[in-house]
Image (cartoon, rainbow, N blue to C red; front, side, top):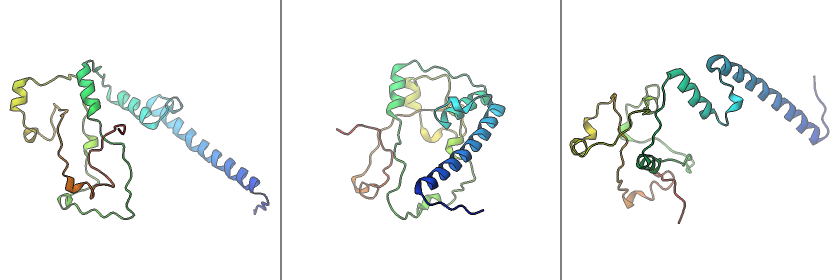
Length: 172
């Protein structure tokens, strides 16, 4: 069957109806899967990460401890990095000589356990004896570190398209 369309508005209406119908089918399937697997309705969440977080809590049965130390909250918020999600160059080739053994199929840091309870400051003795290099790769205890970074001026131009450790700050 061939459609003869003479008006742009008719073409637009047909496109919109087919697009919305397809999206509705996909979302209804997603809705059914979420209700069946997690007993949560995805229409009640603003974002997929919000739904994923609730599904993770249900799956792991973890009870999150409320972080009540105001100084800890401020330190963690101050350490949040990110906010840049683009590369401005047309062509970028991976050339990190230290990443020869990188395997995208292997586990990444994002699949490691996250802190959820028993938050505390280290004692002065623990800080004195602390060494990052001595922490086992898979450890029951994790650490949130506040560090001072030195970013050499010689790297500023080279990293201008994607700087390391960007901060979320309002410009002066």
